[in-house]
Length: 252
Image (cartoon, rainbow, N blue to C red):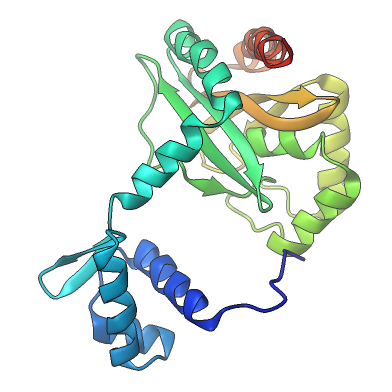
């Protein structure tokens, strides 16, 4: 189970529900938000007015959307992360070298958060973005992280978020997941063979601190270019070298 506040503040919970709903539906008016949240329109308006005053939402005509204040906060948080500042200089040239997309992910609240991405010349454009969260069990990055977390923590994450299917290749059985994680620990890297998006392959290696994952890095590309030799040997070797450099920089 996830963390539960002992004494949650109702007003704060309502504000966060409004923010989450605006993220989900992009733009909405007071009446639509009130209906979806089963709240009085006047209460929703008061929350929105407060958020607008503090630059967290913007009003476009009669509708509201999230403001760029969130980007400011996210950017501040990311630039304060030593892992981000250390990994970025290694991932950018790797993207150029491979021509594909490189990624950096960390785990937070049982989900994977992409905190950096770099695009090579041939990298495919998919509808994803830095800061996006993803399930850990159906990504190479996520499985690389899970493989180096305590078993009890992995079980907590599964209990909280489940193992939803994204494609027919997604692991949806917990015993199968633990078997895959054991193989990843032995092998040193993880694969996503069209487990999240059909036609997309990804290789990831964990970034370790005292044998526990603090993040993972990956290279992602289409199946047509991520052929078996490149997918299973060439890219894993390149990633392992980069991971070693990042871990050394973090240590010293």
